[in-house]
Figure 1: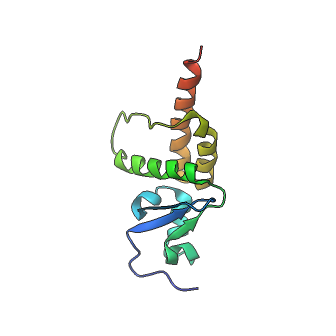
Figure 2: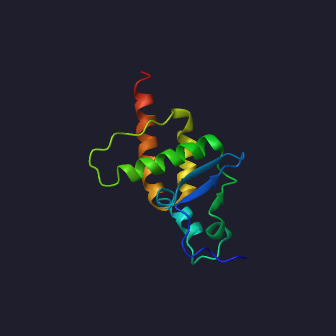
Length: 126
């Protein structure tokens, strides 16, 4: 297995189960614990040397929303009273599962946002 480059690229590629590729900044991607561990240059994972992470469990629509969230989180990391991110109700369950899979900070944040959105939609039905 080739060793990781001394200076990893500023960008990484996240690949969905259906083959969609999302090129995002490494710093944003590493908000998710699993991605951070996969890209850790000391990990000896193939992903660390290639800068590409494939997620066989996450489809393109959900991974796109995950990428949006990673940038949203990075943008608002030090802000107070951050507005809810727009999440379509039909994606809430899949995003919760993706957040659980991706771990760490994302696990704590996405469910809260998804639950708020789902609760608003349910409360507005009656």
